[in-house]
Amino acid sequence: MTARIERVVTEGLVDIDGTEHKVENNTWIIGDDEEAIVIDPARDAEKILEQVGEREVLAVICTHGLPDHVGAAIEVAARDEAVVALHPKDKPLWRETWTETWPDIDMEDDGIFQVADVQLDVMETPGITPGGVSLYCEGLGAVFSGKTLQADGPGKLGGEYPRLADQLTAIGGRLFTLPGDTRVLPSHGEEVTIGDLEPHFDDWIGGSLTRVETEPEEEGPLVDGTRAARIRLDSGDD
Image 1 (cartoon, helix red, strand yellow):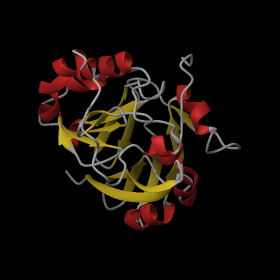
Image 2 (cartoon, rainbow, N blue to C red):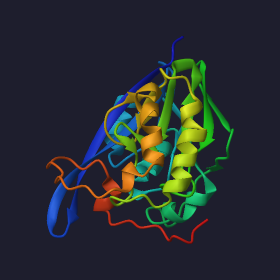
Image 3 (cartoon, rainbow, N blue to C red):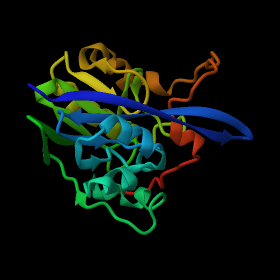
Image 4 (cartoon, one colour):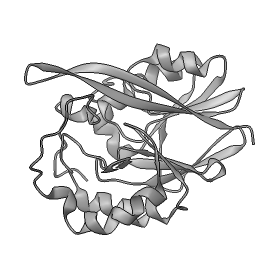
């Protein structure tokens, strides 16, 4: 087994009600010494390509179309004329960042990407966005969960859950069917395992995610960059 996974953390300042906050995003690189696939190219193409080095970028895969996660997609892909992949339902979000360019590949459920000696299986996991996907690599025991699932539970958009029922269905019906030791590699924050999170699923179904919290959140880097960007989805989108 020669393939490996690397993380690049990029950050940027965003304004919320006149106050600047730092937002951190994960970009994941999977491949060997010769070739790689870049997942969720956020913000800083130069930093991402520095980590890629001389390896050939075969594809740039976006687990969703939110602007702070696709901001470096075109530049990263252009260096090696790599293809860019996105689920078609997230194309309207893509247009918020890239007004004159479309992704090359419309991803679908059960699609496959190959790099080095491993395979990435596309799993539709909507909720945060209508076209949200996760990418499962059985060979490395990891799933790239985008914004669907984070280390502290289901991801949020603007501090809220746009389609929580769909999101929980995707988590329970797709992600929590994976082996318990599968690494969950999200678009924000640190990694965790399926086994760490699955015991909390019944609480999420029971409403714990939407109960009003009385304790103020601690100051620090935001894990939800979309809130800072003031992004909202039309609740009528399919």
